[in-house]
Image 1 (cartoon, rainbow, N blue to C red):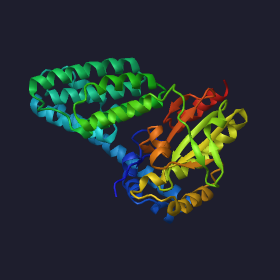
Image 2: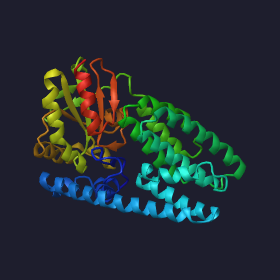
Image 3: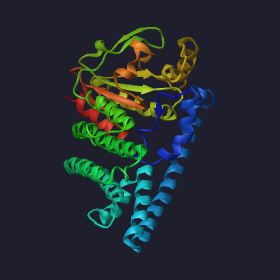
Length: 364
């Protein structure tokens, strides 16, 4: 069964626990209802806590490996050092350890004796590390420089040093997430508009286009959300105009969705009196090749009862009722904040950014 959606944690710090979660979340994504059928809320929370603790330990080991590789490269001849540095940068990209690899990138950038591949990898690592430090405009300028260098070097070297598709997508995703979490979708949009024109590989172009389409939602009117809630009552997002609305995309098989419910309830309680509403959009039907509402609805309702979802929840369905497609959602948990004017104010914010953004919007 081919899984359309990916379940990742937006609640944990970038890179902490993400790799550790992939195994259990991939299993859940490939087998809708499996986690929900087997795990109660306390068990789900405990499982996620263990995985996150494992992720933190794994990150420390990865950091040590990067340090050891940097020390090794520093004592080698240029050609041999380039091999060690390339290995270091590829590990950093795969492990979302851009800041940790930045000292090695600084040692490589501008060195004439390193390979073109090593130079590109170093500059990409530096690019994302700059965003982590809040140097957004500099990162955009460096991206423009990277694209120009990569294009010229590719013509000269006949593409012999091209990065893998997975590496390019990993860097783009890290860049995208950091800019959104920093509240700079404007920089992300400029970057992806620039990058999509340089993307020759179809997979990379599709990824960039999908992210760009989602970025274009910010500032635009929110797509309609209509349908019956889990109790069979009609729901229409248009009726919430004049209020701040947090749209949460979730599925019963995604563990992070389960553990974030209590926190979302706290946010709702804190700001409902100021005009905040929450609406959930369930995506269980989009995970099955032959979805039927009748077979999945009991499981969805059971999740809502067990985790005490107190806000309206509608179900995204294939075809013209595909709310996820209208909002460009391909990974969950995902969220959208809609302002009082009915326009989308922010997308995909983590917990540390989501609460302040809502507070600002309801206070207007």
